[in-house]
Length: 147
Image (cartoon, rainbow, N blue to C red; front, side):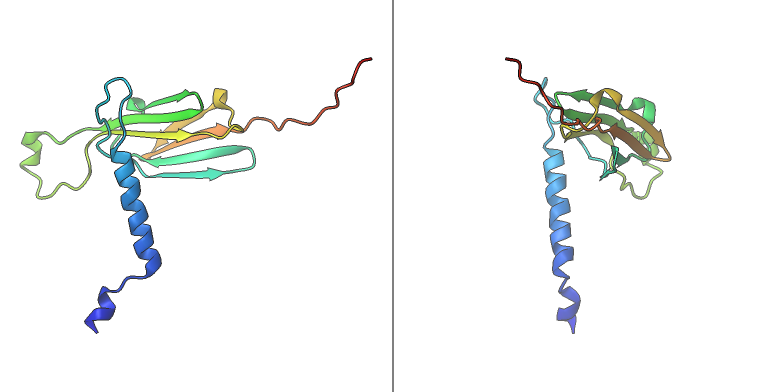
């Protein structure tokens, strides 16, 4: 019977492996200018595509939305920020601290259909929402050939 308890569903194992791989990749984020690691943690992100836009939701509890830096350059959206560390005096009162503290850094390559000039962001209740509109669909046009 004990053997059955130790066996996990194959999809659960694959999902856990995927999360660990993602965490490993996010820990390897580097600042191009200093070439030093700058990402202590990475917020979890959901991205959905709608008919006229892409919507990104990032979990950032404990982070002031005004302290988040969002940049767009060469088709890459970058999100940076940090969650304050617990001071040594405060940590004496805690029995356990599980929330990761420090800087975070995430980058996303946007599709060519993204309207990068009209990206908006809002932060509320520990969730950062970034809305990336799609460019209007280009309609085919006929080009006359002059003789």
